[in-house]
Length: 534
Image 1 (cartoon, rainbow, N blue to C red):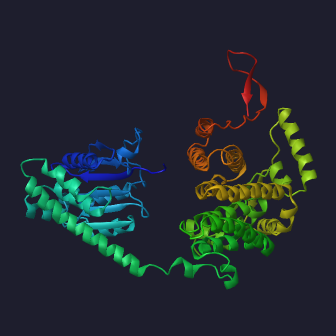
Image 2: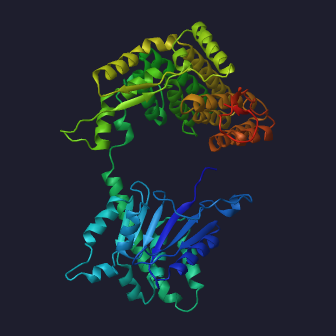
Image 3: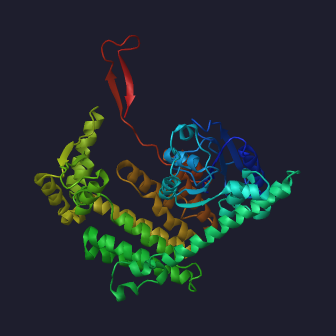
């Protein structure tokens, strides 16, 4: 279960019922059957800002958690808020200025009302902050925003702003609660409940109507469907795969065409067709929407286009990268921009492009160095990408694609890819769910260096010890649990626990060389030497 809590920051001035609003939200979560937690951070509106209340709701009903309890955060994380609601416009801008909102994530709901600060009142002339500038800031740093006069609605309904803010939150659809859950909590408040419900309903309608209009505009103004923006491939090539998988296949094919050429991209087609054939056999009516083929189109392309020094040199020397860096540093036409790239390739990177025999001898020499207590060999490089020499060096290395298929790493990667591919095919033949879970294990292969190696080892270990035995449904559940554990814990302890729980052996412990290091002079106490592990 990879779900994350839904986070909300409430900003309210003194006397506006921010504490009551927080209690309502927590009670609404309990009434709806969801776990929730709230904390408050006192503030002084004239200096440190409004009192803020932070609420997190886990979007899975407690009845489905099987006794497990989610872990909540006590404080909001800047840039990681799902929503923020504020009862005063300047306070909204203050929180935006603190970095609390993110333009691609945070929904901002704010009152347009202003409570003038002492600094604004001290000016001899009109010292008020320009509301238009504040609204521009809100628009710029929010995924979506709703701004209306909460104070006016509260006065018309004869209630306090907290009831209006609750209606706005409910109307936004932020939390997975029904409207009845919110209203039930307000009704239990006793005296003044009817007025609070009037304010709640007004705000609910305003925000819900605004959300519907925004969704409609988004649909109308949305770019053309992805299918029309796909890389242009021959119709006969696209016809090899069902419509559900064509987008991912097209992206994968173009990636591999650029990576190594047409022959390598055609190998991708051949491999993917093997998966499609067995999925059609197991699911002839396509009730599952060719999900296995689609997932394999994604993860197979990513694995086949593995990163090596040739790929890195190609990416570092592209014109698009230089343009991106210029934009990031905001370099003007008269500015002199120098860009340096730091590399530290080791023996494994060089051996990857050598034939297997030469690569094995080179790797053995490096292991011998490490066993003797020396550091693995590496070549630190600082290359000025802005210079002719630096760019020429990178482009020369990027042009050495022809070496890649002759290298030891290429052969090893293809062998492991074929083993995973056969695992998906055989698993699908046993049961569709099992094949799908094995296909999703492609997510384990990511990153570079030790992270990439560890991911491939984890995948093959799961494939060997969980995917091939037992009842297919149980094997599918075991593969899914192991994959989620591996993705959740880089150290691998969670994965080992899942392996043992499903009757498989834990991953073998790797030998780590032990180095004796003499203690530097001048350190008091202890022995003359101590152990250190790499």
